[in-house]
Image (cartoon, rainbow, N blue to C red; front, side, top):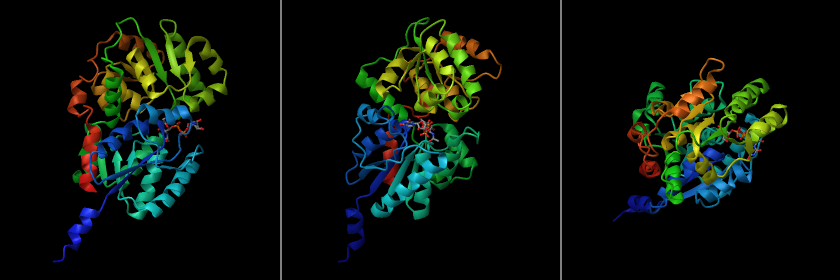
Length: 376
Ligand code: UD1
């Protein structure tokens, strides 16, 4: 009896390769990697491009997320967008030609994401995109270009919120390729809260610090804009402690201008915090001021108000959830907006109905793993 076909497919061990490179990728990948571990016969390996390489931007996240060290490190480092993207493509192409994974999973919208997507498309290696479909509709953001290109090339598009499906369908993506999985970054956050024994309750109104993160080129690369934002933070610091863990990109810009010295007088400037320390500070915050995508989502889940220093967001669910407000257009409106947000009331961690409807329930990694194994 000839049983060759079925035997071959039974023996086949699909290899799934996760490509990560920058800080926010690690929180999204950890739950998927963990959930794949429960699927017998699936090999799941991690490739780190090295886009982020400082210990505080990379290694400590692997520790806090209880992730194994990467199986492959490309060590590409910094450079212009073209240099960084091309460097990742060259290193990644060598790797996939030698190893030929069955499925590559990319996360979010960073240069590592789009670089790996381009290589996979050229070699016919199937590609899954976790956090597909988000759109700010602002093509001056490098991340928006990375999202558009990656989604155009992906075979499996795993979306975190309803806007993701809407955007993809409008762009002509076949509905069968789209899976609503919930948000893997929230799985990592919920897992960490459980390990910390945190109940996720906000400090009493009137107390609590203001936690700040800023790193978008549109906010930190222009000295005039950076000076305006520094004045806003100084004004906030008259009422309460302002804690600002400074991203390397922002640190460079602050060091190159007088704004850095001025800001250091009023605000507590510290190195980037490791994941568990940042989450602990979010829990103590009366307000978060940020331009990060992930922090908009984490604050929404935690029920901490967030003032986003951008006029667009690719994560409209955080606005619908009631915690996130975008920058007002009027000059001088920032301080008023911040005070209103601090005075507001928000659902406690994990209980926002808008987020629960979108499956932000700590089980997104399991859903992503099932979708991958089903498609592999
Ligand atoms: C990148 C992502 C952004 C994400 C952010 C999270 C892109 C286009 N941007 O922005 O979407 O929100 O990561 O942090 O992929 N640097 C260090 N040490 C490091 C990493 C970077 O000193 O470990 C310096 C580099 O020299 C570079 C600057 O920081 O000059 C920016 O790094 P880069 O990875 O190019 O972009 P980010 O601004 O971090």
